[in-house]
Image (cartoon, rainbow, N blue to C red; front, side, top):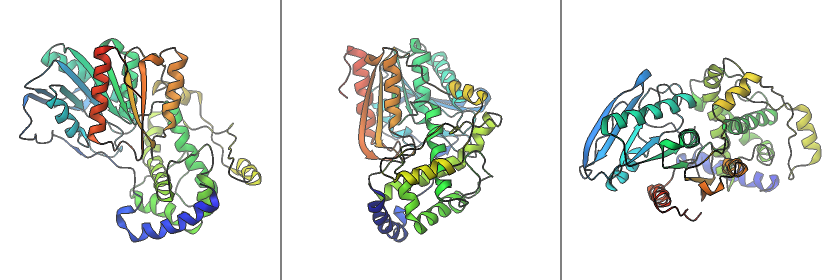
Length: 400
């Protein structure tokens, strides 16, 4: 959408959002958590339900149905805000668990031992979960992985690193192009926002005070700035390095506010993990846009704040996690084209990495033509899982 058309649409959308509370842009959703498994449906027939605490304080739950076929799914949840209490995931997991149980499939999942963007901890607790399951129930017939968002990235790493332990992987809305691609996306959005709206938000791209009220400190001020000057927003969404997702002004605004909120919640968590090393680097970035006037782009490239990462930061990004493309078990990915938090371009990035290694025959990718992040219908998840199982069983990959 061109900036002039976007400005008109945005003005109308702002009035609509102000009038309708259920359309108000919100902070990035946080998974609902509790310390014990949800109550089972009376129609669910589980032979065994085992819960407990793993090493370093992670919580786990393992469900084996009465009609167990011998297959097990290890589920890995996504990002949880650093300040949230440790707890088992509940969003969508109960429905997926019960649907798998109805097929005779065992299900195991856990929290991480700490929240935030802790890829290594998620990886280790999932490996621990696998060993706990085998210790309790013996060697399963087949083992599958399912993960959302950050969890999908952990699934990806396990499929690449521990392929002898698993038979297939389903990665939903995943950070599959690597953490660096995700960090750059979030960093570019915040940095370009600060160029067009200087001083509106607390902190900077590489420094953030403690956020105690996301709506009051981030979402509200950003939205008010867009409302006062839609032109800056129209320019931001037209720049190649930001490319916020959306099919209309409401979705574009919502995506921007989600990204700014995610940055505010996650930056200090990342800096703690990197011992203060800044991950984002735009020192050599030439910001581009075919939709904006050349003089505006010249001014942006001359005036935008530049940030530099360190060698240690680059090492951290490689470890946490840059995919290798060493994929030798079937992986099926599903991603919304208009993902408001993990850009759809992660899929193309991973496709290139896998192709470079000559393993394209092990990867199938599907697109859901919709807006949102990880809000898949249960039917979509289950049909994708069953297609993955059929692929493993027959050796014939599913249709895209």
